[in-house]
Image 1 (tube, rainbow, N blue to C red):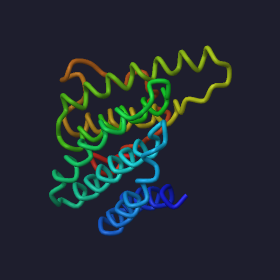
Image 2 (cartoon, rainbow, N blue to C red):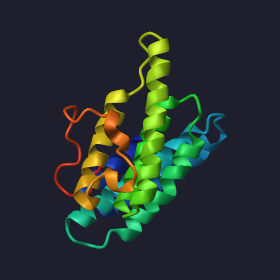
Image 3 (tube, rainbow, N blue to C red):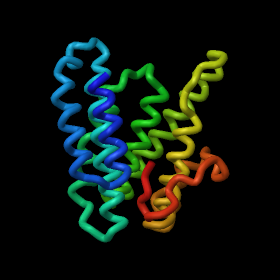
Image 4 (cartoon, one colour):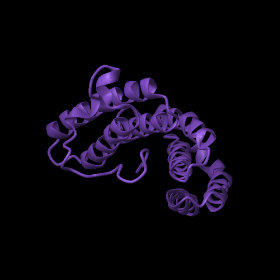
Length: 192
């Protein structure tokens, strides 16, 4: 519980731009995580990497919004996001879709549009597979609304930052309904 509480605390501080408190909470979560390394699912390490990626991305966004250099934080998000995805079990489709869009978001925050598009395309493919699996299993939750909102936010960041996905070979978030959330308002890289 302390591990999860520390991760959630780090996320809150990251989203608010409190870098010192965010990094302190992440360090506490890292100290608490060794006991979780023995879990067969490695869920603890997956959650730690996912939390790190989200925190660094959020801190980069907050720095960018204030005109400060955000490149180092965005690069750290790009380092952590693939690890979370790699540790996510193949059958955890909703988590894989969420972490794929988080990876795309990290690349967008790091000003790497081609990599962001590639990750976003993987997100859409994962989301489509998840929807199909959820439809096959009546009432199976998959977090589709969350992934859809994040894809809409990513598309808005592309439009603001580079003029849209079309420049990079298509529009990966086309399956996202623009009316289903407005994540991405505010800073040009507002991440959620």
